[in-house]
Image (cartoon, rainbow, N blue to C red; front, side, top):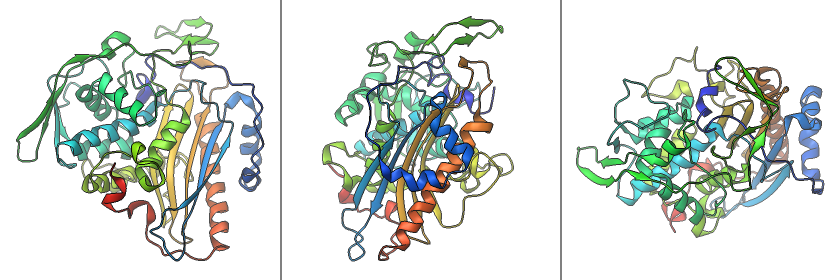
Length: 421
């Protein structure tokens, strides 16, 4: 199995399934025309072929050159958006889990140096035999956002518990998001049961505890999630017919995109939708969301094995190229069972251009899941890299035509008060 497919065996609950796309006609959004014109022919062909189920979201950010601290103007553009169709969010589900854990730390006056300790190892899901029960939140974030390890998600999932997770997501305006599976676990009943644990200050003091719990059963919110033409079992046997993914993790692309925007630019959303994260911790987490493997201090990652494109694909793809100097990218990617997605906020320091971009697609031509025969390298990752470059070039050209803004590294310069409810 490819290196990051494992990341979602549980985000998948078991595998991949889908809800039929809506047949409702959508008005054409001509804002995409200059982007699509910059795509190479093979990437444009991906857009035109329904096999790949491409969904795109793009938010353009404009700031007042005379008052860069003022609330920015946002223009949102969508292509192929199908919020009721299932796709695997895979490791993108780690973004809200990290934000929810950060909220819990902030509620107790803790920062990223706090330790999250479980009462016992998770009942199911990825958890190496030598994995300690405790880890600082900062180290877990580095593992999560630099190379997309699964264990920190499973630790935070078991500390928070399913009912608390979904109560908070609903309050924030995400009633259709489902984080109901540990990563690496297909056991729907075991995924309801969490161990609980404790939060410790850096000096070892126990600051808070959570109890073991069993969450209410939850599933895909729009009926049954069925997809594909077959499912390959571990013994090699292919079971024909669509696979049921109703008890897997699910996030509409618009939800993960909105979660990132609300965190990176809290002043652009109502107070009720802002993450309750204290500013020192928020600053630490913003840095983690932009962390490239070569920048991580703890743990350290060898760039030869973990290039910039190991767990981020807009602009660089999945090769060995580094991000261009001056391009700041923060966000999260997901890859599982042929599904690829990425949500990111980007800023080009040279031009001052700032934008957010999200994409989801199914890079699986034959529709047989769990067979490890996907079109990642030939279709999916080259498409996402080309899309990222095309949007960047459009944004740069647009910025060149506007009055220059003060270069404030805007996505990390908000005041603490802008993030409070």
